[in-house]
Image (tube, rainbow, N blue to C red):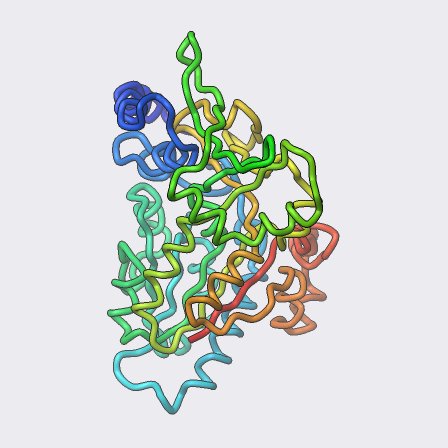
Length: 366
C-alpha cells in the first residue's frame, strides 16, 4: 500500500505539470504525450515517482511474480546462446541484461538458478529508468547484479555489444499513438479539458509524427481491406520502434527476447475494435475516460501488436523469428520434470487457453 506521503507528493505536483503540458500543446495534447507525461514525468510520473514494486504490493502483477518457469526457460536460452557463441567470446564477459526489471524477481530467480559457477560466465546488468524500482531491485538483488544502467546502450558498451537481453512487459510500457478511422480518414486521439477541467478525448487530423506512425503500422492496410465502418481505433507503439532503432547501433552479437501480452494485427483487430488502452490502479482495471484520470498514480498500458514489432525488427536488420505464445516458448525450453511439477499458478502460463496464450514471445538476433 502506498504511503500518504507518496500520494501527497503526486497531488502537489500534478496541477502544475498538467497546466504546463496543456499550454505546450495549445490546450489539446496528443494522447501519446499525455500518457508519456503521466508515466514518466520526473516530478509526478507513475514510473518515476509512484510505483514502488510489482505484485501484491503494487498496482499489477507480472508472470515472474506468480511462477519461476519463465526464469527456468530464459536460463536455458542463455546456455544455448553461450554454446553457439563460445568461440567468438573474449573479454569482457557477455551481458545478461534485463530491461525494465520491475521488482527484480525475474533476474533474482535466474541468477539463483545459475548458481555461483554459472554466474561467472555472465555480466548481469539491469537497465532501469525508474528510481523507485531501482531501489527495490537493489534491495532484492544486492551484489548479484554487476551494474544498473540508464540505457541499453550503456549496458551493451559494458559487455562489448555481446550477450542476451530480455524484457518482460517492456513494450506495453511505451506511450502509444492512438488513431481512429472516422469519416473516411484517420484521426489522432488527443486529450483536452471540458468546462470543469476534467480530461476528455478529442479527435483531430493526424500530426506529422502520427502520420509516420500510421505509415509504419501493419494495421491500416488490414482495416482498409476489411472495409470496416468508422469508429475502429488502434494503438501504435511508435516510440518503441524508435527505441529499437537506437538499440541497433549498440548491438554486436545480441539475442533480444521480448515477452508481452498482445497478438498479431489480425487478432487484435478481431478482439478489440475500439483499441486496448487501459489503466491499472491497485489491481483494478479502468478503460475509457478513466484512463486519463488519476494522472501519475496509475499504470497505463495497451496490448502489443507483434506484427508491428516483427516488421520493425526485420526492417532494422534483426533476424526475427515468428512470435510464439508464452506456453509454446516455455514448453520448448523446459524439461518435462519442470512442467510436471508446475503448480496451479504455473499451469496458467503453460495453458494456451489462459495466460500462456495471451502472452507472446518474440526473439530478435544480430
